[in-house]
Image (cartoon, each protein chain N blue to C red):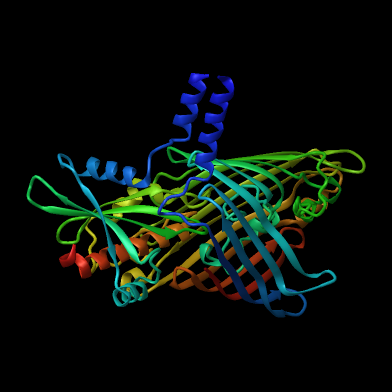
Length: 174
Length: 353
């Protein structure tokens, strides 16, 4: 019976939040960092509306959750976790940015649907590395599409674009 | 003691089913797609015909109670208006989805068998031509839907789906349409002989999707059951401006006359806007197809030539946004029997959201 309980606990992955998963990913991608603190930033309506119009996608909420990460090299890095909608359900993703706003990593933290899971592919996500707020996030140009994941690929690309644009505008306040 | 542990077990399962976090709130969503077509048919004998048709209007509605339990549906009106034997109103999808984890989920309701590139994903901006490829009509009869259950998942780049659903009506299998008219479309479907479908795709190479499916059914009949096997392979490459698809399928039948249907197509396009750095995409393309619903027939020798079609199609798709497509294509089709040639000119506009 104990084994069955253990199996269910492992099978259902009780106790791990998406924040925990995101922090694990941050630690994996930025080695040797000490304690990191999660914060949230409330986006003012004007900035929110400007970015939404530019990227062609709404923010999931009025606020975003982020980590400010001091590193050994005295550089500060930032990580944002956010949601975009796929065909019907939200996709949760993480973006790690340098102090200058350059993308260092994009990772899908949670995907919840049958279709479009190709966006989890690390090779596809690595296309965003080095992009900044001046980059072209249009699918089919500097970002390649995904066969069988058109809606999810567009959503993620727009969602990442929103984060880099937002960072550019709010970095002095973080 | 056992009772206590069972209670803990129940609690764990329940906690998981209804677990919520900051990244999920129960929500209803709508989406949809549609396409307006202008079709001109120019036969080598007889008069031309021209038509304007709002071919498909589809509304997608979903509700998620938890991030694992959701409902998804699609309702479609074909050809704008429904009257006896004209137009269609169809419930193409309506299922409860339990997405346990990336590697396993289950669906039950009206759902789609996973056969070929277009049966599950066929929003107009996702394929190049105005009409769906003839292969996706004559050999794989999209949109093919029915009542059943499905298991699906994704592991290490392999995306898989297993479907058990209503079978085919063996009395409606024919040399002219293969299995197309044999679909029950969920209408009080006969559940005696289920159809089993399994598909696996590999999706971990950027831009490439490659996969295969196999389906088997002992189609019910008033006389003798018809054993049907559908085997197909498919691939699509979409990278660096290239857009290419390939599908090949063969259906074998244990039927009194019809023994097999066979077809394939290959298409290649390129986004020429990459040369001029223009907004959106403009993809001229070429497609070669060959299909024959009566590939092998016994006792009716002319049928094999009567339904043997070959086609070359030239066209272009312009996408100002990823969700909107304006399309044009021109094709020449040849039927082997009598060397009948027909030209088709199609224009279309489609959308998805």
